[in-house]
Length: 119
Image 1 (spheres, rainbow, N blue to C red):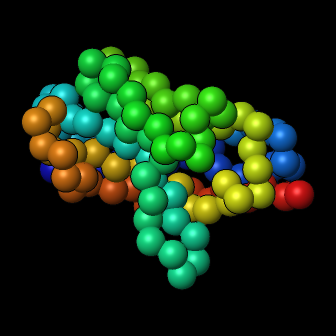
Image 2 (cartoon, rainbow, N blue to C red):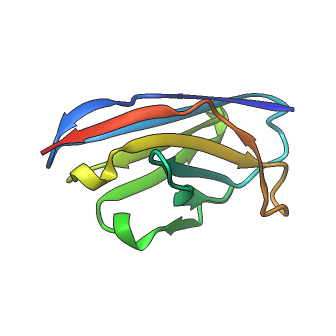
């Protein structure tokens, strides 16, 4: 079992930056794929960015060039650097992890952190 805790959300003006962190605890030796997702009220949970244990990344088109996902495997922590934020980036951001490097389904989720971008 893996527990995920996000931090770093908050209120920022459009054009500003925030850095989210996600720290994993529990069984963290399975080299899982990790990802960031976001959700707005009444909408589904959308993928933002993912990163494999080896550092291969994927970004949604809406955040390419503005967001950067990274991870420090020694610290069991994943980050999301968000620059040039837009009001449409406002959402609850969730951290997620798969069970291992092979799985593609995200079985573990954090509690979410609110990001609000004012215009």
